[in-house]
Amino acid sequence: MQQARTVTFRFAALHDAESIRSIEYEAGLRFASVGMAGIADAPPMEMTLVNRKIDAQQIVVAVAAGETCVGFVMFEPQPTRFYVQELDVLTAYAGQRIGAALVEQVAQLARAQQVMQLTLSTFREVPWNAPYYRRLGFRDIEEAELDAALIARRDAHIARGLDESKRVFMRRDLA
Image (cartoon, helix red, strand yellow):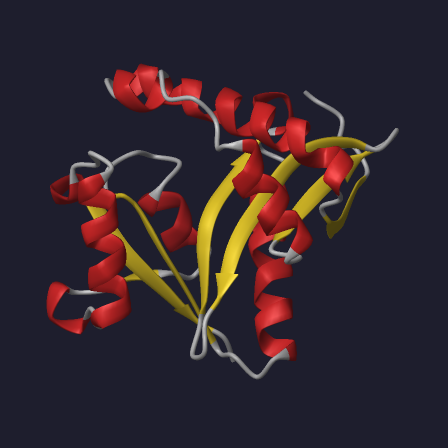
C-alpha cells in the first residue's frame, strides 16, 4: 500500500509551467488504454497559454514535499460560473484524492467571488472523466440546457477535432 504524501495547494508560478505541461502530457498517455490514441499522442498545451493562465492566476497546482508539482487544475472564471478546463494528476499520485482537492480549490475560489457553479466538458465513458466527476458531485447537463457559452465551447471542441458525441457537459452547484 502506498503511503499518503503531504500535498499542499497554491496558485501556479511561472517556474511551474514546464511541470504543468509534463503532467498534462503524462495524463494524456492514459487515453491510449481506452483506444483514444489521438489524445494520447497530442502535444501538451502551448507554453504561451500556460504562462498566460499562470499570470491570470487561473491554475492551481498540487505540490508535494520538495516543491514538486504533482497535479494541477486550470480554470476560467465566468460571470455565472467557473469553467474547469483541465484537471491532471501524475499517475504516481493517483488514488490520494488530489484531483478532488484541486476541484475543491476552484470551488472555494468561485464561492469567494459569489459564483455558485462549476462546469466542465469531459468524456462520457472514460472512467477517470465523467464517472469520476459524478462522484465529485457534478451532474450531466442535458443538450437543451446548454447556453450560448457552452454551445460555443462545444463548437470550439469540434473545430479542434474532438468527437462531441463521446463527451458531456457537467455542472456542480456550490452551496
